Length: 404
Image 1 (cartoon, rainbow, N blue to C red):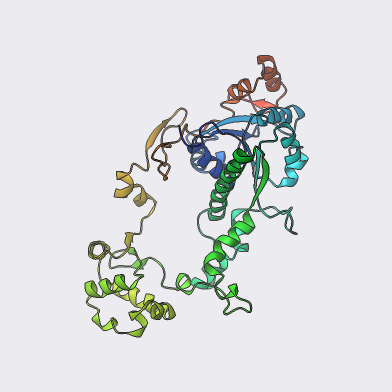
Image 2: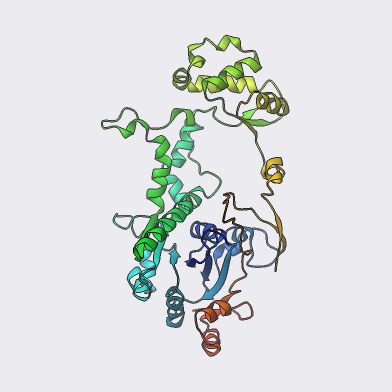
């Protein structure tokens, strides 16, 4: 019974950003009803599979949910959605608001059947600017927020994307906070509301929190950018037999580093002696650090720096992360028996609660797995459910998809 037990969420999101947010809410105890099209969320098709429609990205972004497959382009599907929304606490979506309006599922329509609902939209751009109706994807937002440019400045001049859907996940986490804050407001006032979580504005704030720099001031004091984070030698350092992550940051850590490496010659060097001196000469400092770390093996450095309380971690590949001793001790990667996919590796909820411990309530559903169950709970009769299925509005695991 997690802290959100009793909260019901109508999850109209798909792909990654929205499902990542609603999965977190489901892990926290909410009853998340995932509304899928009769063809299913496209992420069902991504990656290696044991069975069609159950790809790993879907499995790892849609646990703690129930699935119902409805054709919302048909009036009966839209009406069924509104009946579900009538008793829900949250409706979350991540298509453009213009698409919701075309479906006649805009905020005003949904609020008319449930004035207490939190109507949460996670989409590309704020609706009061010229980009309002534009599509948005993670790659686009990494570029538009300045992130790809910063990678170019820190590297060989070539803009690149971070090799993970960073924008989708950052904005998804922002959506979790916005939805929870809206629920607190609703519980205090009795009033629901519309809340928009735009990707562009969220990512610009996320990136420029570090890198606005001298552009904070008017007139600007520099061209922006946090020099330490863009130093070309701020990267995993090469050792004699691999790589290692090390950050020697404050004066105490540098003093310990000089001790363990025998580099007394650097103690009184103005470029190394103080925080401000290191910051002003960060490229030279990190370059020297790289030269020093190349003189021993990874194992030697992990032992030596660990004993000196200097921040250090291994550089894992993906298999190495799975075998990390800390994650093994905390049982972060439980292998669980999925009803259709057999043994699958999951990831536990990282946060811990003292009184309301959380855990995934169920593994990711097959397409439409809970359709009949969800409609019965909403008061649909057996005849109504059968009619929805016969008309191609409802897809359950034992009925084929019907194209609109």
